[in-house]
Amino acid sequence: MRRFIITGAPGAGKTAIIRQLELDGFSVVEEAATDVIAAAQAQGMVQPWTHPSFIDVIANLQRDRQIRASYQPGEVQFHDRCAVCTAALAVYLGHPFSPFLASELERVKKEAIYQRRVFFIRNLGFITPTEARRISFEETVRFEKIHEETYRDFGFELVSVEPGSLVERVSIIKAAIR
Image (cartoon, rainbow, N blue to C red; front, side, top):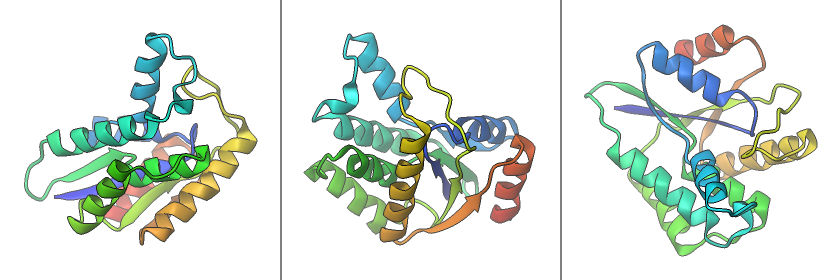
């Protein structure tokens, strides 16, 4: 099993890329933060990212999804973000790494869950706000830098996927995994 991470700043096009890879027959594992935000907002929490447990809820859901994801030997699987992204989010938000997040980061490293090459989807030069994505373009750029530094600090190699059409971006990823 080869698990690849698709990551990048909010609004960079990760979800569209993941959807296309899924349509192309690849196994995918969904991103957690957007679902955590949507669930919290549905319960009346307007800004769940300010809550101290926010990071751990995301890390726990990511862990559960990674563990539950079925696969066939030799299969390529794409993960929309992982615990390293959650670490970057914690840094961005100014939250400390909890014992759970630290242990999850150690598990990911020790068990070599993911390929060392990570597909880093570059921002598109603009941001489209949503209920879950309330961030300015300037903040997206700042988060992108933190994200990149965090992955490098954890020893990952970033494969930069620059802005382009969906077909072009997916082609870059497919060519890199061959």
